[in-house]
Image (cartoon, rainbow, N blue to C red):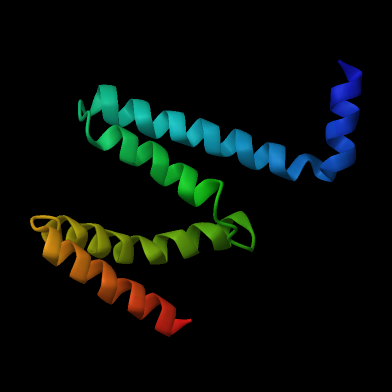
Length: 111
């Protein structure tokens, strides 16, 4: 048991990645089960799970925990608007494609 732990500490000093993975796993499970069994919303549960994975594992927000929380809270309304817009545009394939084109152009133009 000591060999894998020594290997892990050698490749991840301070266990930063392990802590991030544990935090992401805990919050993803919590979000999934809250949506699935407390809110009884089967459709929202995978969104909660994959949203946490996208933010927790695939994005690297610098700063202290308080700074990261402020950043995420500042971006939250933008996410709400984009999800609402995507839901409204998903009625038709043509509007969904046009919306993705405009959004993709805006993101790549913004930098």
